[in-house]
Length: 491
Image 1: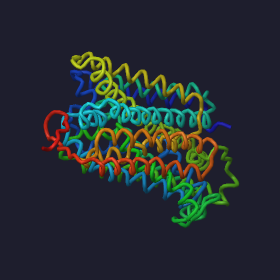
Image 2 (image 1 turned 30 degrees about the vertical axis):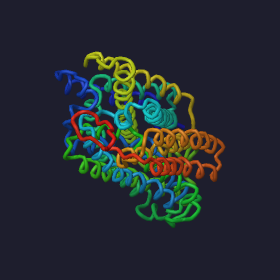
Image 3 (image 1 turned 90 degrees about the vertical axis):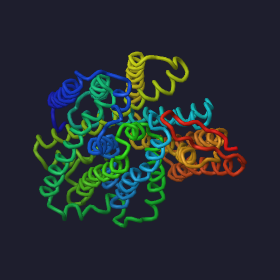
Image 4 (image 1 turned 60 degrees about the horizontal axis):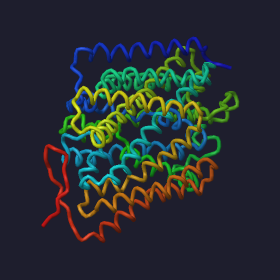
């Protein structure tokens, strides 16, 4: 039974689309569109806008739905292992952003730096590009999938129509002015998410019985209230921690904002962004505890644990509250999709078109190319989402994908003994050995294989980088300049 009608669902979509597209159009219509505005917002983003932007860009489907699902299914332990690494990744990423911006102040992407770092070694560049493109593709799939599932369950709306609608809305305003559009909408979306979440969740808890309703479900329906429960730490915590800590390092959304914010504000941007982000999964996880309370659970009809948060809202609050939650979910999902579109536009324009097709292209041509890459990834990602893969294992699979680039990226930025061959094989072997195992493990839902895949994806990269660096007798000097740096051997 639908909580709200399909007509009401379409109305929320229409209002959301009108606000976001209208806001971007009127705020940017008089700006001359240059490639730097489109890809890095003229490198002039304040820490406040940057923090709101990176926070809401990370409020993807897992933050909106997996946090409450883990609280519901595995209790406090599951929520802990999802939330803590999710926040910690911002603090891990900040030093990398500072380092990259110092080495390449006028850069656009991490793979662009890799190309210069290793003296135009194409195979290493393409290995990193694979990770970055695949990660953005995964972000589009998982958020379009979650949005379509949400609308279908709550309204009865056709799943395919819902998925396509969300993807198209985010695409339209992204095409107008790229990253500038993304950041403009991000600030509004994050503000709405915080305000709505801080109203709806306490309201639902109060209606359900207050803090005792939360306390009664801290163990989940089959989990534990002990944060460091050994089985949950092993079966869920290991894979989640590696995937989440690695995520930003394989995510052009983070690097793109690292290039876009004012250089002096990088640390403040990511620290504040991480703290703002953390408020959302922490708050929503409380709804999962409420649903797991045995006194409440028996009265709820939860066919899909991924949707437990909106189900609790719908059960205890009036329809207007559920409509606001749906609008809030749209804000989180579309913010990540538009960020993924912008990330792909920079990767495609800088790392493919300029490098391999037309190095001397003018700004207007590059703008056309950027929009074409946005459109292409939107069609491809949305098409896969329409096949309805399972939300959680899609998330874990591309967590393993980003893990392949964790140590190769860190060593490339900070260790002058790692050469192109070592970086290439570190990424390639991790992908070849770890990614297929992760896909298989998640499809068959074998816990031990899932953990093994998560560990291997990181460990292979670490071991290969260390061996390659130790065996390399030459050292390289990082050149600090206004152009992307190149390696030069130290005499």
